[in-house]
Image 1 (tube, rainbow, N blue to C red):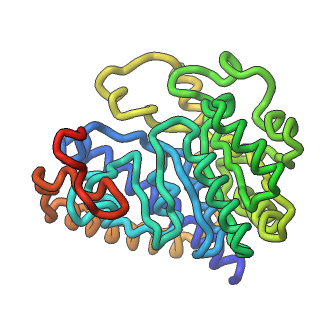
Image 2 (cartoon, rainbow, N blue to C red):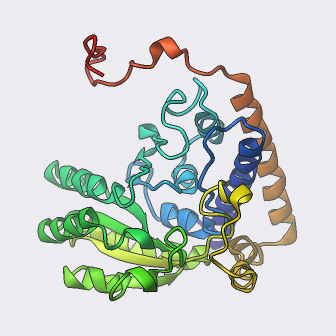
Length: 324
């Protein structure tokens, strides 16, 4: 693929994620999406850059702030929007919602609402692929607030010990909800990896091409059998931790800090690398895709409450009466 095509592809992915989040926030405001969402606005370069370095048959696991990862890996925007809206045409028939979207066909093993929980799932999947003799790779996302979680550290230990094909991507946006990493974490993110002998690097998470290049190296290492790599992608969350903040308005970061963080917009960084006509065409195409996605979501019904206990077991059997 030519460099110009790669640059345009990264921009299209980021524009899709940005527009998707903007429309999803509006659907939260109008009550179409219940319970709110965790917007990833500002962090698009991490999702776009990492997934651009993966093959279609590689796998990812994601976080509560995972719409961008799911879309970048290839999930259908319309079915993803329908999932957030709790509709039967969603990726998971409206049962996963914002924080648990999964699309096995696109290699998305699932987002996860539990902080850090996607990491051991990814390590297990990577181990299984290695046992089968496959050269597929698993990439997992987690935030700076997860780097001291026991399950993350245990997964790093086993991944390094067994040399599984895993790429660990820490999206360090400077805030674990409303706490700074420096107030809650001894040492550094990359230092955690060093303790297990895992190579690690800090990457500019606002530059999609820098993220893609770093990820490509980590993926090649994993695919060759050399084991896991950790990438700390330093980024910034433009919007709220959760849309609840739009009404509650907690004050944990200053306007000056927020403005400084937004000054390096990943869409502007990547967009500046494109001819104006190419960027305008990508924006127009993206708007059409997202308009169609919203229409698709709104046209579908909610699941029948009578089916609430279905899909709980792999066998398809319903639980016995009184079991819940």
